[in-house]
Amino acid sequence: MCKAAGICLKVPRMKFGACVWPFRWVPPYEHNVRRIAKLGFKGVELIAWDRRVLDEYYTPKRTKDLGELLESLGLELTEFVSTPRGMASLRKEDKDAAVEHFRKLVEVASWFGTKVVNTVSPWPFETRPPDIKERPLMQVFSCDIRYDQDMDAVWESYVNLMRKFADVVEDAGLRYAIEPHPFRLVSNVDGMLRLVDQVGSKAIGMNWDPSHLFPSGETPAVGILRLKDLVFHTHISDNDAMTNCHWRPGTGKIDWESVLRALKAVGYNHVLSLELEDAPGASHGSVPEAVSPEFDTENLKAMGYLGEIARNIGINIDT
Image (spheres, rainbow, N blue to C red):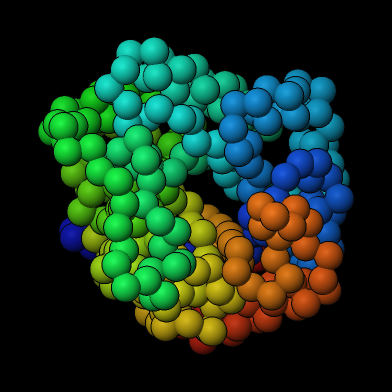
């Protein structure tokens, strides 16, 4: 039962999942899927970093084999991720290519049987700002800006593109969890609510990621309460509110009891997907595979820490 304001009273069930890329940045992912299952996770996210990976790695046969592997390990594919290029472009050919990439993303997700796809919101300019993780070390945080670019036109173009994406996911019976990020067209809850209002599709919501929202000025729990049932999926990591570092929960500044109470209040009943990109031993672009047992320990500690909070406030975690 939910109150008139949209806050739910029913106790939700959640599960722990893991993003595959902090275990191994680039494919193949089969070995690391097994590793994730061995740690006790019940969900996993897979990713295609670009269109080439989407086409060449996620073939129908490999997707079938990966799906069977997930099923045999008792893992749910909670979300499938791939971000097309050109989503903020005003060029027709770039937007057309983005739509085709998104169609392929949805097609592969449908092969897997997952119900949620994810892309990160795009940069508003052709050139991106410096890595936000370097911001505390910089005297001047600067980036190249297209002063001749009409930002109203960029936003309108993006909204129209999101309407096309929404049509694709609606036709496939899926949901589209947009991931906000500092400095991008959708960087906070206000941007997400504005986009959803203008696109007008119930198939669009948010992949709630505090390591992106907290440094954008959001109070994590308040954002959840504002989004309500627009929280389609989560990425879970801790943060210092200055950068988009992805630490183990309990090692940063986020109030995790408040976060879990907010998720419970809005009736969220999907996955808490750990994305510990900056924990010791994690994989990243220059070191494609995390081989240190320390990273496994970080994930186990995270599940233990969050699991205890969840039990104390009456959230059921599937084990």
